[in-house]
Each structure stands twice: as structure tokens, then as C-alpha cells.
Image (cartoon, rainbow, N blue to C red; front, side, top):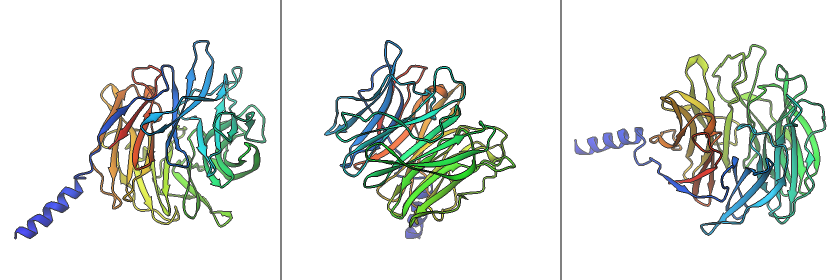
Length: 388
């Protein structure tokens, strides 16, 4: 009888996420006042690399980064100075590292006199200090949208940049595209992967043991906007396939997509949906590089706003973040989900107006989990914290 009771207790505690509650340890960063659009990546040695856009006193904006090693941040380095960065939370600039330490950066610019035009730029650096002259990352130069980009190292001397092209405006159709960038920061190849996708939702790309995995919000003629994935394996792309049939029908663009993380063959995708009138964030796992997925786990606990991010932990589980409604404010929530889909307790990271919290980003680096987000209360400031 005693052993049966203990077994029952263990199962009950597991179902409640016992032992998986995260704590939030605020860590200062060198971004300073006026910083926006924070993003993460790792260097080849596993160190966290934080990038952000500054707002200078003269009104100019710079893309800057810093690396954290030995518990200290390096002196911030300017990647691109006085550019017309598009200040939208979904249009985050990004910096990645190739295997030899070469850094590649991308960002979106919105010309001052243009209502709808967005242009995607890239630059490279061998030493992290001197950067190549920025080049436009797409062939088309017309005054339309080229943005919502994500990038990953896809080979020893190349990166794959995913982005959306709206040649006919947001009323579509809008195309999911890939540009291959070499280690010199030059465009090598451009290709189309899906001819009809949601116009204003960010892309997400990772490299698995099998190849590339891309998650994005798809679109059908009936205005169904569910999350789809494509894979690049053995030199070719798989057909686009929904990761789960939410069947979210919406005659608008939610600017709210999916996040993806990978480690070896294992991958996780989190995303926002309001199908059936229930606004929530869900999570799936894959054990085969994104070829198949588990049944979704709902990770949000109340009415979700979405803007999710995800990282894989060392035990095969995931750490997920999202924005959630709470009274007159919003909050950033995080929780762990183990490899079997059992969710731990949700923990609040920060609270503020929904738009002021931006698009929080999670990073797993060197056995640590980090999160970065915009300032609360309408202030421009980047915050960072470790999740333990």
C-alpha cells in the first residue's frame, strides 16, 4: 500500500511540473539607455553574443554587439552605423557566427520617404571589429517588403537567410525566400520556397543534424494561417507541411509566428494561435530533425499575446517564453517543458505594456539559459536575465 501511494505521488507531482520551476536572475548588460531590438546568438566557443540597436542623441541608430565571457561583457562593437533601421519588434536584426569565427549580421531598413518598402541588408567580419560594406540581400530592388528575416550558419563558410518578399504588397501573395550568404558577406544564391505565406509574420530557422529546419506562418486561399515547416536535407527541400492543423482562419496578418530550436536530431517549435477564439501558445517536439512532430502541448496559462521564443535544454526538454495578458498590463512568462511534454510552473519575468515588452528572445548557451527583452513602461532599454 505504501509503495503504491508513493508511486501515485510521484506521478501526480510529475504532472504538476514538480521540480521544474524556473527562477529569474537579472543580469546587467552594456546596451545602455535608448537600446531596442535585442537578439541573441552564440560564438563558436559557446559564449552568448547579444546584439541591439542604439538610439543616439543626434537621432541616429547603430547596430551593436557584445560577447559575455568569464562573467563579463566585452566592450560593445558597432556593426553598422547611422542606418535607417526598421524599428518594429518583429523585424529584429541578427548576428551569427560561422565555425571559423566569422560574424555575419543582417537587418531591415525602411527608407524614410517610403510607406511600405523594406530592404534587407547583410555584412560580414573576420575579426568582429572591421565589417564589410553592407549589401542588399535580395535581387529585387522595388519599393516593397523584403524582411522578417532569420539566419543560421548552414555550412563552414556560408549562412542561410530566410525572409519574405511581398512583390504585390501584403494582400499578396507573399513568398518565403532563402538567400545564401558567403563568409565575405556576398550574396551567392536566392531561391523561393513557398509562394503564398502570411505577409507579416517572422521566419525562424535552425540547423539540425540532418540539415535545415524552417518554421513560418503559412497562408491558404481560405485565409487559414497555421504554422508550417520546410526542411533542407541531402541537397533538396522538402514540401511545405503544417506542423499541426490549428485551422486558424483570420482575414488579417497577426505579426505573430513561430520560434524553433534544435540540438542534433531533436527540435522544438513553439507558436501562437487564436484558432477557435482561444489565444494560446503551443509547443511540439521532433526527434527526427523536423520530419515528424509530437502532439502539441499548451504552454500558456491564460490569454496569450504570443511573441514566443524557445530553447532546448540539456535533458531533451525545452524552455519557452511568451507574452500573456494580465489586467491592464502584459507580462513575459517562461516555463520548462520536459522531453515527455510535462510542463513546469509558469514564472513571470517582467510586466509592462504589450508593445513595450517587444519580442523577448531566449538563448541556451554553455549550460545556461538567457532571456532578453525590451524595457517596460515605454522606456527604450534592453534587459537580460539568466533563467535557472
